[in-house]
Length: 273
Ligand SMILES: Nc1ncnc2c1ncn2[C@@H]1O[C@H](COP(=O)(O)OP(=O)(O)OP(=O)(O)O)[C@@H](O)[C@H]1O
Ligand SMILES: [Mg+2]
Image 1 (cartoon, helix red, strand yellow):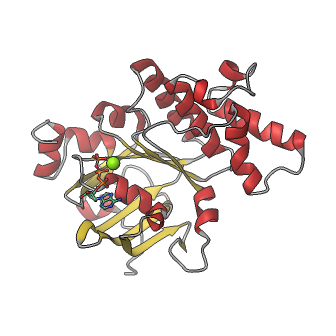
Image 2 (tube, protein in one colour):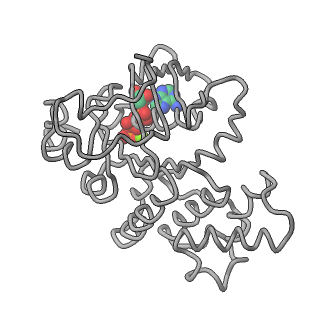
């Protein structure tokens, strides 16, 4: 079998097949990441389905952020970091030398832990990406892109009267939705989120979670979270990482109610991490 062939796990485990195998959006095989001598990600294989949310969970330092950053080559920006193995997006090898990482990151956008709006207006925060990628033909086009992105991020109603005000003047939860609008504005296919709610209060968190659920219809989403409740609320599949290994991956319900691996069980029952 070709090493990149999608493995039908239900068939392999002998369980009844619940849903037909969906073509994965991202396929990772034998991914290794090194920071100098530190082998941070070991032999990770995973299929990430399209139009769904996958959570990455696991104790601090297990490699969740490192692996997430492999998916849009953000690790390229870290000098000591070396990535091996294969990652395909829609069957295209994203580490192929002919792939432009800047274009790739427009397709595979990222939202970080701490909301990081640019020191510019709300409008300009969202317009920045479409401008550098030449997505708007004129001013009207750009306005439409910005308004649509703010609407999709569930922020437009709250900011429509102050688009010229600085993005940094919004509340934390609004800033994070602004960052999501900024990611959406360049029409990505995949959105990577690294603990997007960890700096937010429960109300802002609930809004971002609702948003993630809505965005799933049009985007493939991967979210790193320390909150198992959040993983259970927002994701259809969950992957558990431990010491650089992807220990177990499957439907979120199964991972939380019936994990196969003792390390997963120990983590979800709070025995470590
Ligand atoms: N920029 C970096 N330079 C060197 N080593 C790094 C870098 N980023 C991460 N590492 C190392 O890689 C390993 C995995 O770290 P990573 O940040 O991916 O973990 P994590 O699961 O995201 O943890 P957390 O839950 O605390 O965010 C750790 O040993 C860490 O020290
Ligand atoms: Mg992290």
